[in-house]
Image (cartoon, rainbow, N blue to C red):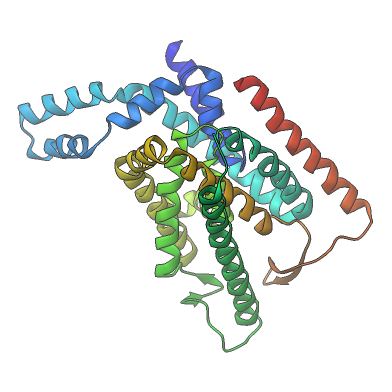
Length: 341
């Protein structure tokens, strides 16, 4: 029964982590497992990797050391939570991709509501807001805006490329482009930052991925891989599957790196430069609102929607629906904040 409860807790945390603005750390607090989770994650280190890799020697002492290490890091607890979280991500990724493709503006409006309201959570953690904090916040906003604008330019290049222009975005065959080295580095860094966000309740790991422009591509990669499992089992392995595996693989490696390094770095920054660190995180959240603006000009190229420019909304039913779900998103965060309190 305890195992089932931990699996369900992991499933709920996975759902929270896949929705930008909802913090898995906050939900872990609500479920009463936050301290145990963070304690287990902090015990994972290079010694853990070394002892687990030691089983390759196939010696009795190595297996004994690995077993002791797994008990030390509370592996059973982490494994059940992890399996539940992965199951939630696999089951809900297709739904979110569908909403993004078929109900773009309301979905973005919902995410805007989540993130705009969740800014209040870290803002309450600031003990003061002086010149240094304001400067750090503006640096973070500028960083996210530059990334968002850069991703917008890449979207325009993709339109030109798929429309028959000479501009090429990546090595592509049959409409399936492999991720570039820059893309893979971005997914690696995003995975490290997202897993590190678990330390601070109120900061969403998926939000950080959204701010860095990799969130939707990662969901699409997961969806492509899940749908392609039957073909993979039958021996068919195409370029889109390879691209999806590369994206998911580098994100997973980034998460592992984040567990070993970034969690300790973020913990150090929060202990010694708490105000500046929180101000930087708030700046990331503020800057990401530009990339989440629901109303866009777009082009449909090869059956794929590609956003090209921000526009002002027209007074119609779409605006009313988008505003409605925006307010629902705000209400969800207020509810979680009350539960956390």
